[in-house]
Length: 105
Image (cartoon, rainbow, N blue to C red):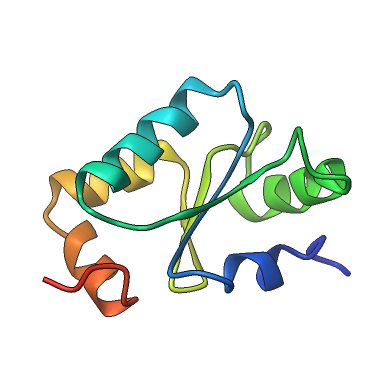
């Protein structure tokens, strides 16, 4: 798989976070989504058998290394923490989450 299986994993839930178990920025993103009432899925690359392949694919997609956290909403790459926070501060994150079916209200 050219994308390391990222597309398949990213489309399994409305919000998917690719990260590592000890990443503080990953924790910040998870906390934000939890505080918003979003049910999210996480793929912790350091615990995945194919984690290194997925990490390389994400680095190509995000354009930086390490690529985590990499957030997908509705199966589409939103980006790392700065992109998520920028959307949130700009009032665009909640509508995006509603559109993806991650929020009901």
